[in-house]
Length: 404
Image (tube, rainbow, N blue to C red; front, side, top):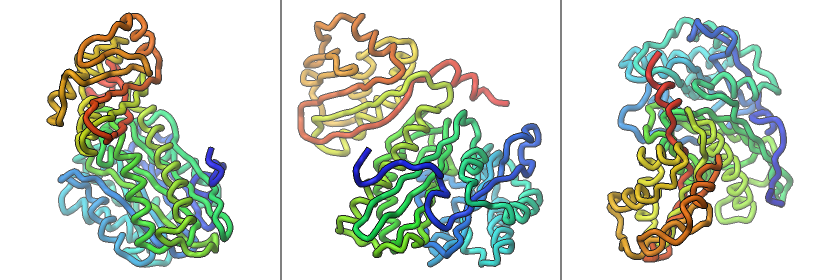
């Protein structure tokens, strides 16, 4: 752990001035034991930043939140699980707006000061009347220890809650960052199918917060893939309420760099949790490509390997089939020379100069039999590199996605 920051308990409530909670509102009537509506409230007006799916098909809450994010101050985030409110037309937009209006009325603020998120099944109209009633009830039940409940309420096919908090030492005192996330299926770079909510009591301007979050997302959530499918609802939202009373964080300062490092730790930790909890996953794999002529080429090669169904199925079967990796590199469209490529499994040389190394296949099989390993590709053409976190592709994934 860095000496600049340390992990602490509390999740979203670790930073000062945030209340959280969840409630069951009946979106999934078959599962009354799990809450499906969550709320995060800043007791003091906060500045907000966000990143959203790059899918051309965007859910209603994404469209509404992108507009509300322009507000100078934000007070709360309200989110539901069990219904994505995506591909729902004008009624979907109205439903997302009504969720923000219900929260605003309950909290005594303006509708544009509320951000909204949804996750669940696509193409089903939102049961907005249930949500409006429950939002009113939930607003009076948010507490200073409800982060774990929020992490649970936004779960869909997730099997574990994803939560983290850190304390950061600055020159003018300490600040805290807390976060929760969800995601297990439809996971692919460019904002995977996930929700992530981040709170901080740092004093920071809106523009600086947006830049810090964008950088952090690029190095974390945009480097993960489980199944190569991008969602319609992907959203990361961050609120900063200045209650730590630190000197305002400014770009280019040592304090801003400390804040960035801590935020990067938070988002990367959650990104890895999402991959580890991927639907049907049995292996967590780090794909690292180096020696590329450009950053773009390194990224394209790493993503081609990480998203290849053939490669991922081989990993599930414990087969270090490097030929499939070579194939993925070849069709990725990057600059490469086959006779220069080296491939390593867990540091063990599998391919030297584009052909099989002298390493016994049994030794490579022992690496792939592990539940965590790294695949490294050296193109020997330049200095650019890129890393993607991915998984195998199992028969359980198919079963989970055959439909209800």
